Length: 385
Ligand code: SF4
Ligand code: SF4
Image (cartoon, rainbow, N blue to C red; front, side, top):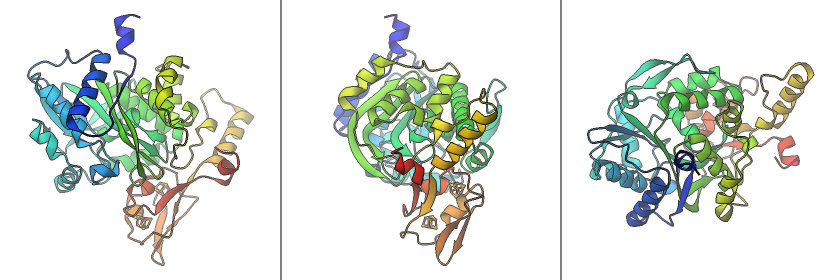
């Protein structure tokens, strides 16, 4: 196999827990396997884009764990690089909220490892005429100022996209409150998937890493349950890494809209038996998803007439919906974050206007009590989708 082809493949290494020495060994192994760090030069400014979706403790498995992030920081600073770590979750992208988030997620460990936590909360409009779905977007300045970006994601279930790993993690290059607007503009899951692919093509991370030591299942991406998978992954290519992630979770690729979008755009081969073989010894048989995506029925550009109509009908029938359960305390956070203004608080509970809801699942992601759930449709439950 040609060297270039070999290093474009994903790599995985067992890592039982977050003991720093074990994490370091596993990180070194997967990075070596994907071509090493010789591209890192002294003085280079490297941005590590973590998943910091909520101010939660590392044990909650909602965010990239600080130990792998700190060990990566050490590997880069040992080569003379300047390392800055951060993210922009939903909500205002401002210092007090981000400081709270850094504190809760244990990122001081990365500062002790020689990195700095991002303090630049500005953004600038990026032009991307080559984009399929996204030709212009708000891009965070802290990553723009870096010579290279490393995408260090967390593997979790996700209401809208089926799972979140490397590709979805780059949605965080759009500053907090702007995300709602993009959700509203890109309501169709396949258009949203194309937006994610555009972001990955624009940012072109030098390396993608995935913290799959403790993953999240169930009501992800913020309020699900942690589960031990015991792996660290790396790949130069975000689509191939996420293909490996899907195989590890036992989720069909057709259920991940952005993998379908990458295939349609020729960025991911239709099949890759070697990645399936790689995942086989570790693959979960009973991973609990967050709702069901209906992307089997997402329309493609060449669908016309009746086929287009039929797919739309099936999509509407099978898609999940957000439903608040008895744990709802009527705090109104979901109503505040809903890009479609589809939620009202009545009688101390969240009420959703189904006709206005665009199924973006921001309410589920940001509900502080975990009361908002992605509920599979009756058709999806009856057919086991
Ligand atoms: S954010 Fe959660 S707890 Fe608060 S009103 Fe919405 S569903 Fe209820
Ligand atoms: S109700 Fe929830 S899923 Fe529906 S549009 Fe609002 S935030 Fe998105």
